[in-house]
Amino acid sequence: MAHLGSGRRRALTLPVGLALTASLGFLPTGVASAAPADGPELSYVVNTQGGPGTVKQVGKAVERAGGTVVIAYDRIGVVVVHSKNPGFAKTVRKVRGVQSAGATRTNPIVPQATKDIGVDQPLTAAQEKAAAAEATADQDPMEPLQWDLPAIKADQAHRKSLGSPKVTVAVIDTGVDDTHPDLAPNFDRAASANCVSGAPDTTEGAWRPKPGESDHGTHVAGTIAAAKNGVGVTGVAPGAKVSGIKVGNPDGFFYTEAVVCGFVWAAEHGVDVTNNSYYTDPWMYNCKNDPDQGALVEAVYRATRYAELRGAVNVAAAGNSAEDLAADSIEDTTSPNDTTPGGRTVDPRQCLDIPTMLPGVVTVSATGAKGLKASYSNYGNGVIDVAAPGGDSTVYQTPEPPATSGLILSTLPGGRYGYKAGTSMASPHVAGVVALIRSKHPYAPPAAIKALLTLEADAKACGAPYDIDGDGTVDAVCEGGRNRNGFYGAGVVDALDAVRW
Image (tube, rainbow, N blue to C red; front, side):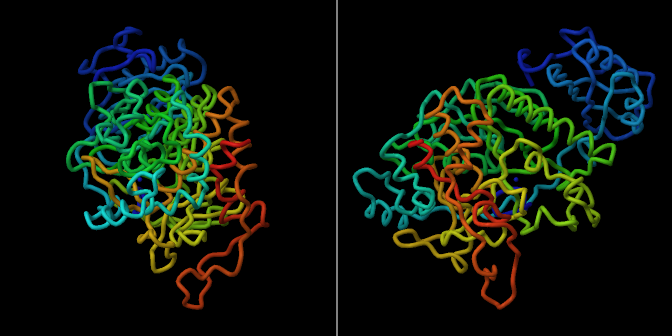
């Protein structure tokens, strides 16, 4: 999947995870170890068996193997470690109580090359003025340009409910600019943090993108819950809260330790929904039979499962590679993406895009302004749960006037607005609908919320052979029936039914 948008995506707080140097008597950072330390410093996750006692014993073994504990999430048995010992993972896998361990990256813990994060198309002053002229009394000024809202009946839903301020959607992403006038009214600071290091940092504004960093998370946040306040755009659930959990580092990489931290933080701070518009670097697909990659799958799965057990519904983008995720094999030419990629053929039943393909996660494909699968969107019968607007080239799918762009309009840092496209933009539409369902059914468990999401979705058949560019060649094959298929899953999400049922 393209990582973000239209491309392929400190101080510790003890209730989230135990800072081991303080609470379990582990050696502080910098204490010498007898183990070799002559390699580049890498980050690792060590997955343990058993409870806090096992975590403590494993922590001691980690230090003997030349590792320094960053933080231990004892509730899920995941320890984040830094080590310069080239044999660290191999050594610690032999320790009693360790289920798996693996490096979370192939490049040392140093600044890395910035990745392509997609095209940002800012809204022009002329477009803003034209949109405001089209707006009706009950619309925010730029809402006429948001063809995506009527595509899921969100405009009709808003006449009945805007969503509850008691519901929070966490944007696990590149950070959210909570000073934006369309986001500030709905921002949940208590549920926000910076998890880039693998340990939560709640310093004021740590969750915001810094100048020059990706605006992706801010765009996602606006689609979910931009306030209906007479300013700018409108979110799918404009009465709900949104928080920012920053897991993308300044170079655009989403490493396992950050993702685990993000889900645990969300779980322990009352989050009702998480939105995940990224894949966990450096592997587009993590193969469970590889000792390193398998450990990453296990760590992220434990974190997503913990969040769901604490009441959160996890929603994720399917990816932007136009791949059939239900195929027998997929060519992965971009992994690892933090050093030199090497081509490989993977089995998607064993090699997973995480968190997207993990059990329990709602997997979202993207549609364009004509309601067809977006040209770039991944798909797969039995993999896609639901579909939502993610935007597409206006050449392929042109919106009805007054909308002028086939992309998705939303918030950008610094009080700005702009267009993006991707399954990254589809997923927050679904997260917004889930927030509306949660607002209607505040005590329903995640399984019930997910069941309502699919039951309320508007079923959509595969339709005619898919030739999105009109060149006479079928671009993708949709398998399945009207009520469940590889392009749209159970259908396009329905915000109106979300507030009625």
